[in-house]
Image (cartoon, rainbow, N blue to C red; front, side, top):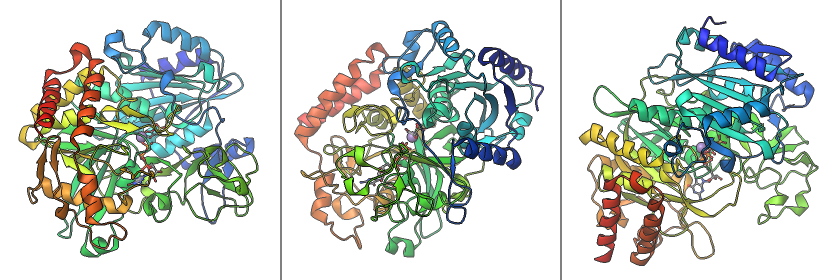
Length: 595
Ligand code: GTP
Ligand code: SPV
Ligand code: MN
């Protein structure tokens, strides 16, 4: 399939290491993929679902100890510890290679080695990059074939080039004690052992498109970000593109596929999806920032997805989709998860593979759930009813606004605009959010997650902040405007105050109006906050302007506490913290003091 010497040598080396019975190169043909699906069904690795209701769809269950990313076992193995920085686990690369090779050695015995050439971004796009993943998992092959562009076409574009990312995955015994997800930024290399779950093993996604790519972007002058990309079309037919960074399970897929409320739809508002998780952004010839989605599918959170909350995501999963760790409804051989419908299936198998007892279901107790809280669907982007025309275009879309956001029960207002780019970088660097089920560990704990990149930045986060500042200098007055949103403010009983989902377009419209200089705002110590009359609340039931006012409020005491926490957070970066950001913090403190 290829004469690329660096690639052939690497594959040979890995064959000698893991010792497979057979080697299969993934050519991207439907015949080859179909044969693999059949094999996975035969061995029980996947269950084929109802051919009429869910054509080409499969269910897969991972081991109960392997259901999310594992941040404490993820390493950035740069040559020096300083390059990994204070927010990443680090290990000396030579030491880690040895450890991982010892773990992986001989583990493909009795198994097939699959070699997957893949492109992140439309094949041949100037913004795209190529990787090759070796794996012993058919599940990984079939997911990669949805999430990326795979096969011969990629090798044709690669030619003799040495510019490709090396990804080695070995399931081994799926032993959590020996699980490691390691990035070697200077070597363009990734090694993942002892997992068979999503972000740990689909190496094109977080490992390459964020951890390795963020490092490449730093070196090459572009940005790899944990951002959705959407196009907001107004009644005049103009489309403004917005990129938004929210931490895992904080609403990127939902926002990217938003359906406007009926009356705005009638007026002609529409949202087009370019991407739901990752954006690669470069400065274009006209000096603006252009973004592509390097992925080809959606690895989306299943729970909470339903016809009403995210019609387009659900529609995307109706064919050619792999479901992971959802509930299997035996009555009609389909799938179900909490929040899909009110009726609980009565004849079903839960995500662990046990008979499910719906009478025991208790919303407050996750152990009674049929689907795992981080259960996911892997759906082809082309299934999405609102996929943007620009999705497959390699040149990317010009970004008007960058939006940060997270889950904050209190503190952050519904939306505010930063004063300028540097202030926006400050806002991103200080972002915090309550943790979710997307990573192993406690859920609901507030932590600082700069630019939603805490688990994904492949180098020193102090340098990453500086890179953001440098990009702003290059963009000058063509820089996107930077905003912050929070859909998750709650009342004292923990109920969400803002309706969210489709109604978030009311906030996006304000954001675009601000970009166009069409609407005024109130200046506060943290930035520009909407005047309550400027957020359109037409047709919103159970939500009044007084509540809106309450979630737009910037409270002096709350923000002084926040500023103190930011100061604490900044301490980790030591000398690496750009002085502009320290000045920003001092500025915020001074403005709060005089409030
Ligand atoms: P990753 O794929 O992990 O990066 O997550 P994501 O950021 O794409 O999050 P996603 O859109 O899948 O949403 C995660 C959870 O947040 C789901 O349970 C949604 O139902 C919920 N959610 C999304 N948007 C909103 C919103 O506007 N309001 C509220 N209350 N919940 C939301
Ligand atoms: C996330 O956790 O941000 C995801 C899912 O998008 S995973 O691919 O597992 O990282
Ligand atoms: Mn994500």
